[in-house]
Amino acid sequence: MFGPVGFLSKLFRACAFIVLGLFFANAAEADFDLEPGDQVRVSLTGLDDLSFDATIDAHGDVNLKWLGQFEAQGLSTERLEQLVRQDAAGKIVKQYDLNGEIYIIQLAGDEIEIARNGYRPIIIGGDVARTGQIDFRPAITVREAVALAGGVRSMLLADDVTIDPIQLLRWQTAYGQAALQHAQGLVQSWRSSTELAQDMDLEPPAPEVVSVSPKVLAELISEQIKIRGIRQQNETGERGFFEDAKRQAAERVRILEEQISELAKALKADEEEEARVVSLVNKGLAAGSRLADTRRTTVLSATRLLEVEEDLAGTSLILTRLNRDQEQFEQERTLWLLQERRDASLSVRDAKHQLDTISKYLAGASNEIGTESLITDIDYTVTIFRVKDGQLQQLVADKLTQLRPGDSLEISVQEVTDDVPLTE
Image (cartoon, rainbow, N blue to C red; front, side, top):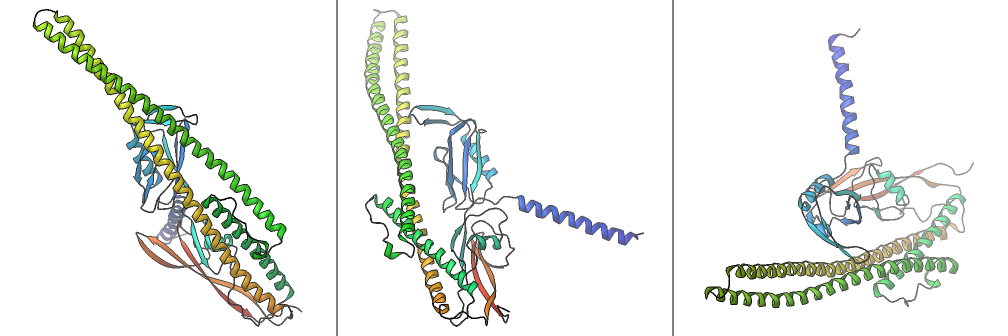
């Protein structure tokens, strides 16, 4: 039997566990607010061809193409969707399909759906095998991020450490992986440079500058050439679409301008006829009903002219947007290639550093395979750099800490030497 106090105490603790469980469950399920670097997917119900992806820019804004530009930083995807729907309700959108045909859509707003399509990446540096970016996924921990970066890498091993055969094999394997990463980075950087310069005759990396066999190098180059060919086909198709759409829009502008010229002449003639009929009516030489018919004709001519002028303004705006979208496509392509080449260069630098370090270890171990001692336990500390409310915070974390989009990690290895014999 429990007394009143004991029963209430146990009941309180049970309720507390339930509340905490619900809190952490909700925290795990809750999505993060949008920040620069996040990606969203915009789709319209029944209009799959108009779906597109967009990225939150450095200022916190997102350009949703023909839907307009919106402030997205700090908003949930649901709130952004609500704002876009409110703004788009009643809008009339003119679009070209893949065949270059123009069609008109009047939006109700509810057909627009916005969902997160990607998080800003995690940046990891320090004592890991591959520094750089890691794709964020919900509930990812520091341990998982380090594993995705290839694991920790000790940079503090002493020159006189005695190596056993297993460790030597590990270093040889690590050297081969670093050599492949080095060659792959050089080839990727070469491919990006050829696309940026639009010069397909640039010489690829020579066998003497890499540490892999000529056969492996040739396979890497062949793979990058295939990637380049596919991207060139896609870019050619994209540019062809822009040029066809611009050509059709320009032709439409020309036709409308000719129509406006003819309609303006017709309106002028109708106005002159109306003035003549007014004069005749005033003199009693024509019936008043004739004046009404003449004025009706003048109004119809003026209305038709206004409609064509409005159509011309809309088509001119479409042509302007096509030019802007094509310029943006070329700019984004250039920025993407520059970032790709930069990432490849960083990968080359990191791999070169690994090659130099492992070469030193292998050189020291080539003449002596001993059993005296070896660093057997590698631990590491974690520092998280996180931007919150516009301020950079530095947080000390552990391996099980869950990360947030945009976090930067600094991994520092702490090595512990255990006096344990390697062989018996």
